[in-house]
Image 1 (cartoon, one colour):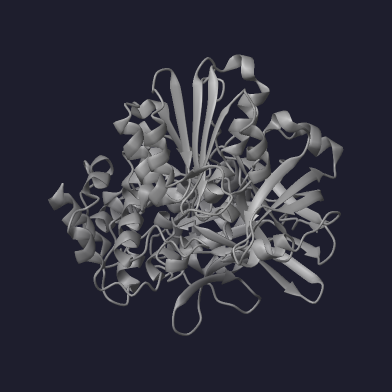
Image 2 (cartoon, rainbow over the protein chains, first blue to last red):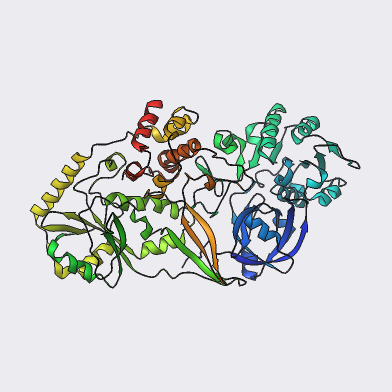
Length: 280
Length: 337
């Protein structure tokens, strides 16, 4: 009999911490599958998602925010928004999280070998980009370089801040952080992400640009990438929509003829620009 | 496989022979016809036009348990889904609809609930002699005596039912009831064909689908969408009662420590359907939702599965409380192309 894809696996929360505070705070979970077989069989690539949840409450589709190169665990960074994410936020180390997946396509990291990688993220949109950053850093000899632009409204809204503060001191990548409004003791850029992209003026030559963030940011980043001379084929983004099944059955995540859960979440801009609903 | 005849007087006995299985058939509840399990004293009615609720629930129930669990435990229990089911007297359009949703439920990853139910279900169809007012099956690849998706086809010849097995499952079912059946002669075959030809002629409504799947997405900003959706109440009847609509929601239900994860029919005509938790809604009004519904049936599904996700049963038109008519929408689409 075939394995039922709707049955989640049990994982134990090993560690949790808050990325940001406030009403819509973001908490990161590091989880490990209880069953050794599941642990060994699980394989994901940057860009993929998983359905995570709590039995009796429900599940939500969340980006896997770690690279497989980091070890045999998964990381999810979850904003507290509704019923399920509230229940997830109540999980502490030792508690059980139910996980199924991985779902969706992935960033074509193999195709990108030999190229320069440029990630442009905003707010929680950095969660699906973080695995690329980690993947490229772990396979540095296969890529020409790594540039990261990341911004949020305030310094308190930046995810993975500690990691990026570290990274900005490293030689293996060029890390650019920005916040919307001036703050005391802020050592990095002040301004919107799309403007910072223009100011940095990265060369499109042999470069892949990947962006994820609020829809309004994505729209201006795409515009500015075009101004900088990037071809559509050099630009990738990742979409989100409401989902229930994760395997292309329940119907709701479609952007026109594409199911975000199966045909996405990663899309090349040359495909996406033909789908007005993707930007709705 | 060879054609048989079942004298109508033997119909109750025919149904009775199948009592070891869970038999679903159209019954009257006093006001309307509905598919329901046949109990001992319940009367199966076959001279009906079609049921309000399609029999898609035989393979994809309105609400079904995906698994049970106890709060605080991670042990889950799946339903066995090992009961044999016979659906008697479904219309060819509704059987064909099951073959259409079949493509989605087996796309890449099999949906285990649908697949298991399907394996255990035998579909005995009944050809239409009197199509309904808004039937247009012949425009979208079906017909009043179409056999696609059926295991057995029956036709009402007056005194007898014409009965023919179409699959091994169907043959097995007729073998069980063999003593009630007699061989059909050529006249019976001819009469069946004549009736089905006459039924086709009685279908008065039609849609033209040529160029629609390719052309529809190009009408994204066409003024036809606000026009055709203006009177929509967002009640979801058109999709809920559509035999090819397959969308579902998944919810956890708890009672004390007993809990289940279940899925239930959902509709793309509801605003909550696509509503993000942030409050953003990619389909904020009925215009976008109507556009999606028509595109999904007549373009996206064709693109993915090479078949129009509409069987022309006419339910969405018959049952819409504000008389929105899919045939008229498609006429306007065709005109705008």
